[in-house]
Image 1 (cartoon, rainbow, N blue to C red):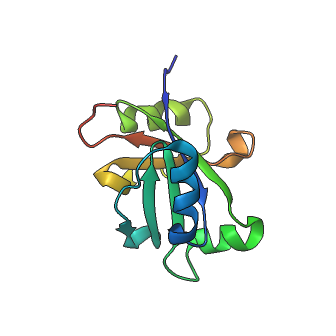
Image 2: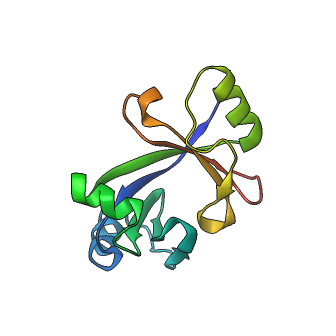
Image 3: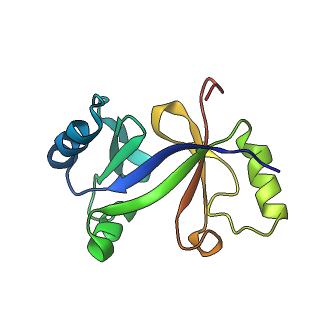
Length: 134
């Protein structure tokens, strides 16, 4: 049995500059520096356990998400101690993986996504922290 801990909630927004003050005010948490993730075509910031994700291009998956759903929940993320082992275990249990192998994510962490068809329609991310300390 896996014991994954909730790591963060990702919210797609058209503009970090517009949305960040709202979540900083609500949570009382400071805003991290903007991190560019070119291979995912997004910019991200963290406000406590909230990740705001804005598209860098009109072809970004986040742009498509915003066109279909507007600003909204994009994913939930769980911290895992060993992402490769977790992916193998989930695959063996029959979960459909968007990422069969981890990729570079925000903050230098390794990430992988589980297809929402197997998680009640919610895109789910696994995160292995760079320092492996959650």
